[in-house]
Length: 105
Image (cartoon, rainbow, N blue to C red):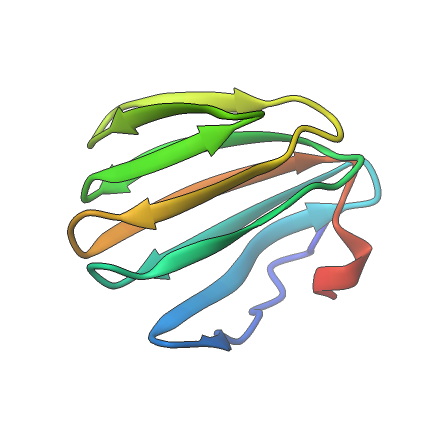
């Protein structure tokens, strides 16, 4: 458990930033802010990722299939799926990973 630890915002460039909200070795929750036209670069990782759209609209592409999501929508990115997104508006995502993304620590 993160024991109430406060994690700082991390600037990822081009107005994109993230901060860890909670983490254990088994899971991690992260808040991500992306400005309009901001890009979540195409990538993959072994973690299962769930995404909740708190604010804004995004076009997500997962393994070559695109989908537009907005506030209240969620999606699951399977382990090793190639994925990325573009913010159609200023937005905020709540991402959860299992297991924890040690590369974010």
